[in-house]
Amino acid sequence: MTDVEMRDASDDSLQPVRILIDELKSDDVQVRLTSIRGLSTIATALGPERTRNELLPFLKESTDDEDDVLIAMAECLGEFCPLVGGPDHAHHVLAVLEVLCGAEETKAREHAVQSIVNIINQMSKEQVAQHAYPLAKRLAEGDWFTMYTSACGLFPALYPQLTNDQRTEFRGFYKKFVSNSAPIVRRAASANLGKFIREIELEYVTSEMLPLFAITAADEQDSVRFLSVETCVALAAKLAPEDAEKLILPTIKSLITDSSWRVRYMAADKFCGLSAIGNDSVKAEMVGQFIALLRDAEPEVRTAAASKISEYCSMVSESTIINQILPVARELVQDPSEHVRASLASNVMGLAPHLGKEKTLEHLQDIFLKLLKDEVPEVRLNVISKLDAVNKVVGVDPLSQSLLPAIMELAEDRQWRVRLAIINYIPLLASQLGVEFFDEKLADLCLSWLGDQVYSIREAATINLQKLIEVFGVEWAQSNIIPKVLNLYSHQNYLYRMTTLASIAALAKVMGPEAIDSTLLPLVLGMATDHVPNIRFNACKALEASIPHVTETCRETRIKPVLTKLYNEDTDNDVKFFANKALQVLNSCNA
Image (cartoon, rainbow, N blue to C red; front, top):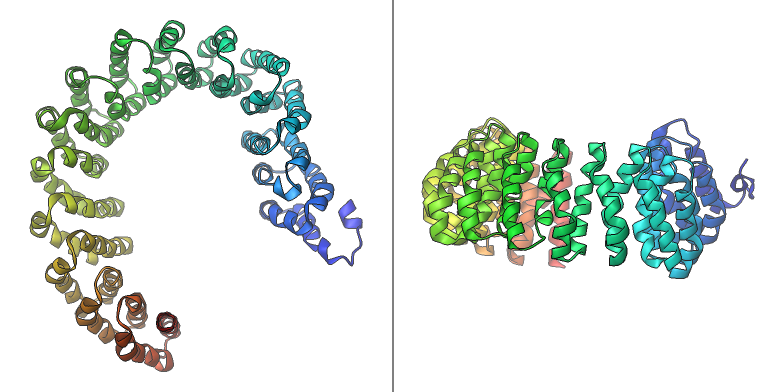
């Protein structure tokens, strides 16, 4: 029996802890997991002193559990500093987290390290020296790889608060981690080296950290090498441009041409950070490296490089974009990987602001048009989603003739998620194409979605109408959209009638009181007597949505009598529920 269980059984305040202990001993992992996630509530009920003296010791003894439970515990303890009485008592929490730093499960260790960092950030320099520094040192001097990996994550957070001697000691520990025989330790050292370098004095960066970086970049394991790319970025930011060119440029080139596609993928993903070094000649040389990544044999690498085209082109000259990068972009338009083309479609539109109107029409328009005709819906969607960048430079008129077929094909795609995606872009397109083009080409399409077989499409279509009214105005809606929407109310299929009510509920939020009173409300009140209960309670929902947007006279004389009758006389319980809910809203509006 634990100390907690031996306390006076008549003390009601112990009940939460007893429940916790019982649940932690349960054979059901989910029960134990639920108990751990409620630790903050238990600690609040116990108070700081008993949390320190009873709860945390119990948790320390309970660290031999399933991985999911340990992960939840490590994550929860990061918020425990106020619950134990503040930073002065935070070391009690650190004692439990130190045990979790040695757990076999990687996620548990990572959460434990992050929780310790959160607590360190709340501690004074003296408290760090007294409690956090010894903890990190014990991990670094431990006898198991799990402790070393956790120490790697703690060093960057602790380093700024250490004395000079302690800093020297920690740099020495890191040298051992980088050369450790276990790949998992070297991976942890490589993953955190960039963070560590950002905190270290410049003199030690060049004399001690650069050799460590060279070791990680040449490691036999590609899982270590690809993490060194992030270290490159940190070094490029830390060193002067001329020093970076001399000290790390050769390593950057070797990473970009590494035999492992994972390393090249990471180099492509971080390329903009890697290329921000050296003089103009070096930057010109890096253009060739970027093009090599765009033409890489692996589609994953080309995808990552294509995702950086817009950002990278902001760093180079207009002539470089036109003469060197755009020819490769034209090759990617025909890339056999749809993921590469989709990535290109998401980013190549961003080149328009860099080139201006004339050169966009001359050099980019053909790329846009080809991507709009791509056989894969995601590619076409990505182009449409980024039209705003082109519209600001040249307008969408040059693309309008190609836009319409692409939109129509996407709108009729057999995958409902594709249809949903294009619906979400319609308001943006409407604002760019203008009301005349919309009325002629897209209005009927938007209305057709109200009758889609998939509920999510019908729901999105109603929201789409609301946004279109915000773009074109109420007067436009009254003459062009609302009459067509209201025609659905008499449809034989009750789902169409429900869609009408959902549309009215959405439109009421953007229509004025007069429009609601004269156009929308008569229809809703009529449908409140429909023979289908689902229609009647959706009518109640539509009335509830309309109530805040109509006059008090309208509420009292037209809406309230109908809702009252439904609540008192309808035989369907759902109808009564929603009628009562709407009446409560009405009464609160009149109060």
